Image 1: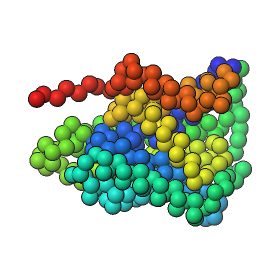
Image 2 (image 1 turned 180 degrees about the horizontal axis):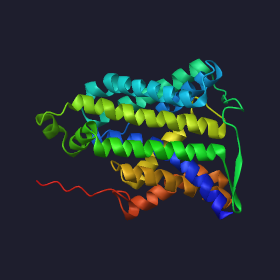
Image 3 (image 1 turned 30 degrees about the vertical axis):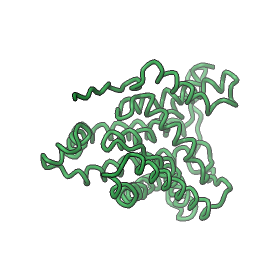
Image 4 (image 1 turned 90 degrees about the vertical axis):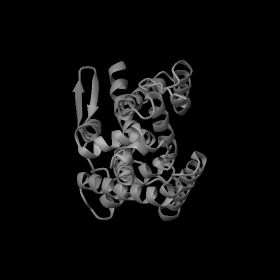
Length: 291
């Protein structure tokens, strides 16, 4: 039924939106596509799983600690892999991002093995709530609530805080912002930290939703989130949110219509279609450069 599929799609799409925000923030600041972002999502899922199963920490504290872990991880990756190449060509930074992605997925394979791991069954008590003809589980409500809270928190940071103002200034003009006294290195580090923490939250939530955490889970999720960011307009925070939810709903609706074997292709087909009609994405602004 339509309402049930809509609930499922928004739940899935909200996790895509969390990952897409990291892509769009980094691109908006330094015009870099961070292709290692999907692996940070994967690392967050493994960190949450380790804390719940080995350290026996409750899921909410594990979620927060996973976000902190990936914040540090994101800053370290930026410092080691991207900052030395900032004045190099875009291609050099892109190759570095792909290298980091392969390194992290291979490391996860070596440490955790190829088999998917699952969260304990009692991680979150499952309660089904009736919404007319549809049902929504306590897990779906939790995912929607956490995703909405994190998106609003990000919007508040970007719009209402001093570091947010510095981030907006840097995204407008990198060099002018530095001349005006903005610590650009600090702004970029904070951007990577925020984006990585959101990806970690997405990783933990997806791991619980599908009860599966594996070394390669970041590949397709990262590509779909990138598609969501481009669909909404890369560099646009509201665009990333909308793009993620839109793709999640479209994917679930496609599966419900009987095209389950094409579920991964649906996102990219929509992306191609939108880019043919509006190359800047749905919320993107056309940038004019004066010569």
